[in-house]
Image 1 (cartoon, rainbow, N blue to C red):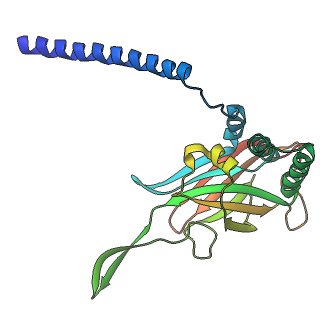
Image 2 (tube, rainbow, N blue to C red; image 1 turned 90 degrees about the vertical axis):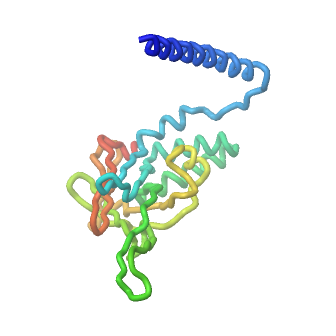
Image 3 (cartoon, helix red, strand yellow; image 1 turned 180 degrees about the horizontal axis):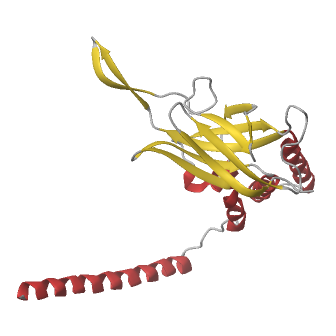
Length: 236
């Protein structure tokens, strides 16, 4: 019984010490703020406004992660937020800003675009060859190649569309900030484009209309997707 009481007292003492130390840390933080000039930060409002357009999916095989994807849907609003952030970061004249807005919005008239940031686990294969037995790894392209592990389809309502192009890109600094911790040097970045019109010339995503839209990922064994509900692609 005495040992039990002693153990409780020790734990209580440690808890009190932790509380005191934490309160002291708070004072140190405020002391630093008052004694060291803090760097100004760009408005977080722009980054927060982009978040609803970023969707994430992780494909699991039991407890193991097969692949993960973070996808940014480049709607008119997202592109305009990019221009705002670019202007705050680099500085633009009114003429430069007007040209940039015209360029990015004009691109959306021809293509429905996504930035895909993803990573996958290496493929494992069994080998029974005489010089090597056991298991070996083979890393294939994530997206974009004929032999890549994953392939994409865009689904709008009940209709599916294949990509016009998938290419590896260097993600602009502004978009890196939009993705936050989802982006890293260990992940691949792709710009995925779909034609904005179907084979009959009809616009897939009309102005001022909201859509249920998903980007579906398919491998030989697995399927996963990201989805946007009531999404407004553009407005007049």
